[in-house]
Length: 202
Image 1 (spheres, helix red, strand yellow):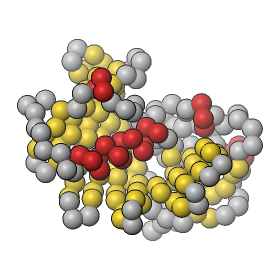
Image 2: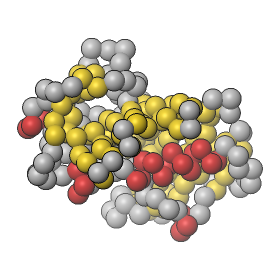
Image 3: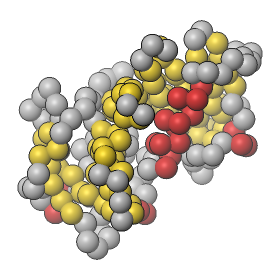
Image 4: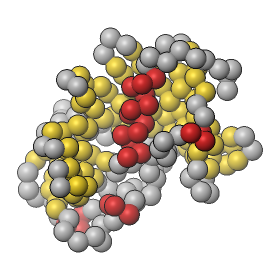
């Protein structure tokens, strides 16, 4: 979860950055919404799905009274700086500021960052991978969301604007926070609640 929130923070900060550097599919479930209480078969969550090229999710991020849209897409494999990498693209839409786009490439073998570039206000910003405070999005089930862990709550979540209902597993990430995850969406995350406030959701 820190991976996702770290990307959000960087994208929000990038709106104000100016230093530039040299040049360096198919839709998935999306939207935002309100969960449906109860239901959800305990066996329906089996861990994060393996993403396929072109799959994406669209989150709404709530921060300081504002709402932002963040699209996360798995863009497949390519060779970057001589290494076989998997690529991700994140697009953050900020009210009154426009879009910030980040493209990240991670080594396919060890998932370490190889390269990432951000485009903000028609400027390209090269980021230092050695100083990155976060990692690329998860493509495998993190240990914190292992379906075999004890004391997992189960429920359902209805994607707004559609009739699609997701089976979710609910993990307490701290006494005040919980994360809703599903095997039915790329990157696994459905909703994040912090101190009783929903801060991120499909």
